Amino acid sequence: MESIRKRAKELLDSKQVQVIIGYENGTSNKVRASFIKDSAQVDKLIYDERCTQNLALYLVKHEVKHLGKMGIVATIPAMRTINMLISEEQVKPENIVVLGIGEDGKLLDFPDLTVMESFLQKANIELTAKDKEAIEKLKKMTTQEKFDYWSNALETCFKCYACRSACPLCYCTRCAVECNQPQWIPVQASKNGNYEWHMLRAMHLSGRCVSCGDCGRACPLDIPVHLLTMHMAEESKRLFGVDSGLSMKMESVLSNYKLDDKDNFIL
Image (cartoon, rainbow, N blue to C red; front, side):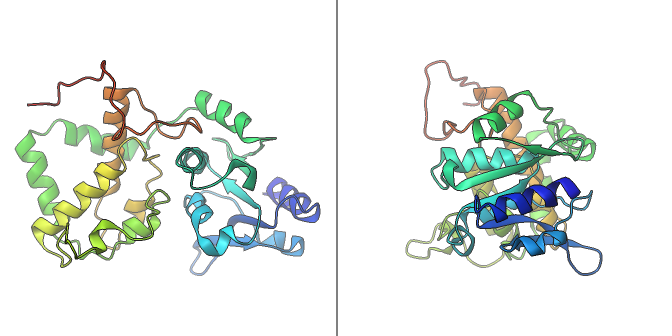
């Protein structure tokens, strides 16, 4: 924690960045995002096991981007997100300084993003044991069983879109679900409409999801929506060899075609 505060102070005092995006204590023993613009405030910064939010979410926010060059406390999922955002031209690498957090919780002060990229390509990137178990259980289901499982799980969704708001890669200024001329997805919460919304979102995140799990944590009804995108991430890797966020030059799974792409998904 002290190493993060020290580095944040150095960056702010030297004017290398104008804001540090990190974690601070909130209410009820919860953690919230912190935006430090004055080095005298760096003592607010914390890092412990409660710090799970993917802070790369804020890199594309207008209110934050316009503060100036950004320093960000980034866990491995956040680092992967940064690579994705750069590859999709949503942020510029020269506008970011990464205070990386390794698997051991210690500071990784990267001199530039190419070093971060090299680190990620060698890092141990694994899902939690709980998420692995849940996905393996889903894989063993028949097609009908999977359909029934997700239809029932998503039926209670009332479309608050917390999952979308929490996702750092759902950055469209206007989502397709908000368009009613033409209307692509039913606006009201309904069994079929809910199913369509979540399948659409999972498809849009194919080859892009970094498996941070923030969408599932954000759901007020504890619907495991993160398992959809995590499973799609696994399938993108298995079928197309795409492991999202390991490079600043990622190709889009949905808009690229190669002659050697597997086609066994075609029935």
